[in-house]
Length: 361
Image (cartoon, rainbow, N blue to C red; front, side):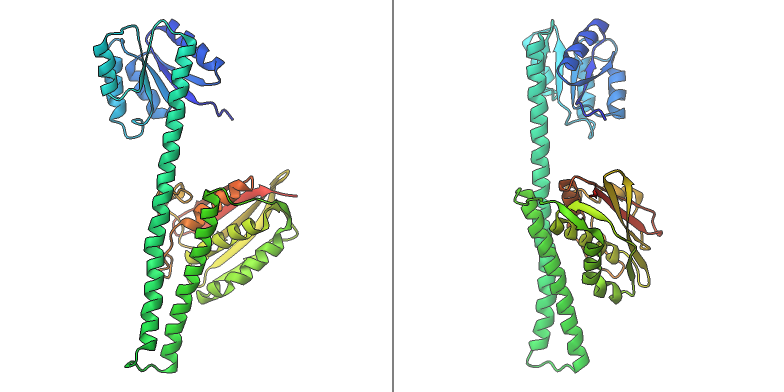
């Protein structure tokens, strides 16, 4: 797999493309080429580069116009543009910067100067993306606290106020219903609090992954027992086909992953449905653990949003259960910390399958 950063070089001079391509390759970058502005815009639509080196003086469409169109494209506007030009007039520099370019490099190229500028703006872009992710993380955190914890306390306080009201008279069955509502609310709050604490520790780097050889069946059975009442409340059959399988993972982290994926499946499976957890060796040293359900399924356009903190995706369960999406985000972080990968496949109305792969022993 090629993980080198893609740099698009746009110049109508073939010799310049050759020189720039050689400099970039020597410095561990992957160059792509376009000999005019139209081809450059087409290339960006096909695959977004990390940075663009853009010649100013080109026939038909000059570099300024290319830059103007790039900055009007929501996908491409954050890609840094460095102009390449033999012109050094102050007005041209100002015009390029006003259009959104981040820098200028003049011809003939000095490879050291060029790479210093390229690396600087690649680092700035990376830092900007990290900051954006951090802000999204903060926003997600506060939205969860503000919305979900408020709902939990409102439900519990409202029910308890009715029960303790001096003028209210309830029979035994009515009191039981109110107590059950309070219990469910607090149970949800406890689960949310656990996820928030685990996620917070993960974000601040305070989670230590201590991998050990674990019997997967034991972990799965414990979590099925933990969530069995939740499944019974919806008349859902929850079962495991996991046999003797050993994995190399942190026990607490593995419990958290399986608990959240099972909880998610219960939430989106209607009454009378089925959920199965299974495991299979997919290749040497790797086990795939699957949680399959007969639930409502997931829209295709939402599949790639499931594990993203920067996208707000909240869907009510089959019994109007509310959620934050934090559980799946936490699963992704924990699976990756365990040296694995996670994914999902689904069809609306035909159920879903969440799966993750971790090292086997």
